[in-house]
Structure formats: C-alpha cells, structure tokens
Length: 498
Image (cartoon, rainbow, N blue to C red; front, side, top):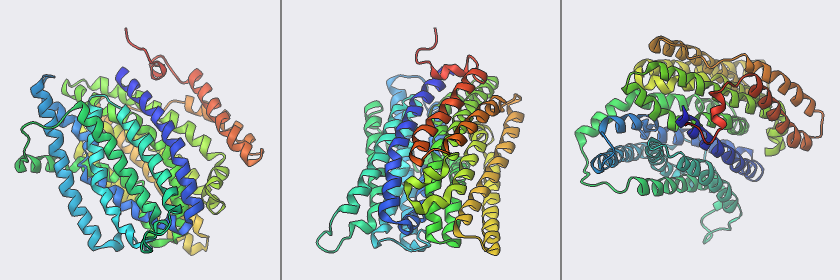
C-alpha cells in the first residue's frame, strides 16, 4: 500500500503538470488553427493512438508479469535477462508498427474521413512506433517503481512539446515556397511531442537497465509472447477505444466542427482520466507479486483503496470543471461553448468508469478472456448507442453540438455498465468485496455544487479564477473529514512506514 501511495503521489504531481501544459495547446489549436482543422486532426489521431497502443502488445500492464516470471533474483544475470525481455517486446512492437503504418499509407481515407489539413498529415503514421516503444519503456521503468520517468515523459516533455511546436509551426514561413508549415502544424507538433517523450523514456531506461547482452531475436518466443498478449492487447485497445470510437463515429456522421467541439471537450474531460494512470504503472507490479503468492485478500484491499482514491479525485475535478463548464469551454474559443453539454457527460463518464478501471487492472491477469469479452461488449454497446443517439438528434432536427452531447451520453451509459459488470466478476473471483463507493462522496459533492453554482453568478474570469479552487477546496475538506480513514491519508504522507 505504501508503494501504491508513493507512486500515486508522484504521478498526481505529474497530472498537475500535465494540466498546466495541456491548456496552452488547447488554446493555440482552438484559437489559431480553426475549428475545422482541429476536427480533421482529431479524427486522424484516433487511429494513430489506438494502433500505437495495440502495437505495444499491452506491455503497460503485461510487461510486469513477464519480468516477474522471466527472471529470478536481483543479480547481474537476472538484470541481463530483464533487459533482453524488454528488447523482445520492443522488436515485436516495431514489426507490428511497420504493418500498421503501411496499411494507413495505402488506405489513408480510414484515417481522414473528413479530409486532410495538409498532404503532410499522412506522416502521422510515423508516430505509431514511437508511441508503442514509449509505452514499453515506461512500463519497464514502472517495474522498478520509477514513476518519475513517466511524469517527465507524459506530463512535462510531451504536452509542452506539442504546445510549443503547435505555436512555432503556425508562425513559421514557407520553406522554399513548397512547404506550408501552418496547414500541417497540428500533425507535425504531435509527431514532435511523441518522439520527445520516446527520447526521455529511452534515456532513463538505458541508465537503469543498460544495453542488452547476448540478445538476439527469438522468433518462437516472440510468437508465444504475441499470442499470450492478445487478450491483454485487446483489452487495452478496447479500453482506449471507448474514449475514441465516439470521435471516429462522429467523423462519419457529423461535421468537422462538431468533431472539434467534442474533441476539445474530451481533452478537458480526459484530465481526470489521467488520474487512473497515477496508480496504474505501480499497481501492475504490486498486483503481480501478490498474485504470485496468491494473496487475494491483499489484492481486494488494494482495489478498494486505490479505487476510492481515484473516484474521489475524479469527482472533485469533474465538479470543478463541469459546474463552470461554459467558462471552461469558452477559454478555447467562443465557437466551442456549444460543447458544454458534452463536457458535462464526459466528466460524469470518467467518474462512472473508475470502478471498471481498477477492476480491470486485476482481471487482465486472472480472467483475461472474460475481461476482454466484457470490454468488447462495452465498446459495442457504446457504438450502437452513439449511432442511435446521433440518428435521433438528426431526426429531431437539433443542431450539431447535440450530436456531440449524444456521443458523450452514450459513453457515460456504456462505462457505467462496464463498471458494474467488472466489479461483480472481480468480487466473485477474489471472494472479497472490491467496491470503491462510499457515501462520503455524496456528502462532499453536495456543498461543492452549491459553492460552484454560486460562483457562476460572478464575471466569467472570476468564476474560473475563484470558483474552480473553491469547488476543489470544499470537496477536499469534506472528503478529508468525513470520508478518509487512516489508510486513505497514507496517500498524503511522504514519510511512511516504521
């Protein structure tokens, strides 16, 4: 539990850094590039990110188990074995990335349903291998409880690079009269950010693991790793897909402007989603070691504890961003205010997903196939609901922003169902309660909503400047007094143990 608290504390600081760094990109993209350009960029990004995650073979969580099983002890031989295992995964990721990139190069219409901002947007496929390798390297660092590298790569280097480069490419002049940086600025900034994160992760990996010794490709073992990783890889892709399939569907059924509004709302709503990644890197190694000793009671306790930490933090941030939602969306640009309804549903969806996320962190090890089936059912339900609601909006004659809100509502329903089903399955397998729900969440939310609603009567700048901190402080004070026990407060203590 102390390892979980330390890892969560470190990565929560990273979440704050990521929030500060992400806002400039949203402002630059929304204000400078235009709503249609953002919509086309968002549609293309869906496949790039999902394929990058698939090509990483689910190593974000699976690598911990491979390293635990594939090397015993802490001597030089064991360390060399661990390095070689990581390089096996990296080689497989590169091979899969090459096939994925070739497919998108041959059939770009899949990636650009609404067209391209520039002919150079096709080079987004170069981000696929970098994305996959970064996931593997960060998972290797997390196995050693090095969460600081994840913070540097994902919360500092990547978001600041995309923010800075988006501004740089917009104002760069023509190069020899043939290359228009401005039109391709969003795509090029994204590619720069992914490779910057890769270099950051690689630097830390080489310092802690070093180069491989006596490593060579082992086709038979690599095939075995790939086959074993399929359920985990599928679960990762589906879990990520639930946050992206709505954009993909909107790209075919709505205008680029509606896609852009939804994408911006999703970027803001995904901030509380990042909180789950505060614990995910260290949760995997802790769970795998308890599974090895069959200590199911400890796993259930960790799920309950971490689940409550996540849902409490997500609820606080959801209220802080959702109650003054119009002001938050208005910061990006006045044409994005219509996405306030989508933002509210998306924030609620992240809170509903908390139980599914924590349950899945265990199910991927003890019930991979059943977890995958549930995940597939979730994304199928979401896709059906999204299309059905969008068609209903069209039939009723509502405007484009209602399509975005409808897609967000579909996500909320689907993730709520997934949380319920996965929690019940995990409870059955561990033979212990795993629920993260506490009534203190309601006691904390009620006064926070009152404070936030009162803040909406202030001028918009004051609503955001004073209202958001007031909501967070109110929720935090009540949850600390009424909801946190001794083990919960462990999260806020730097020096624990004894």
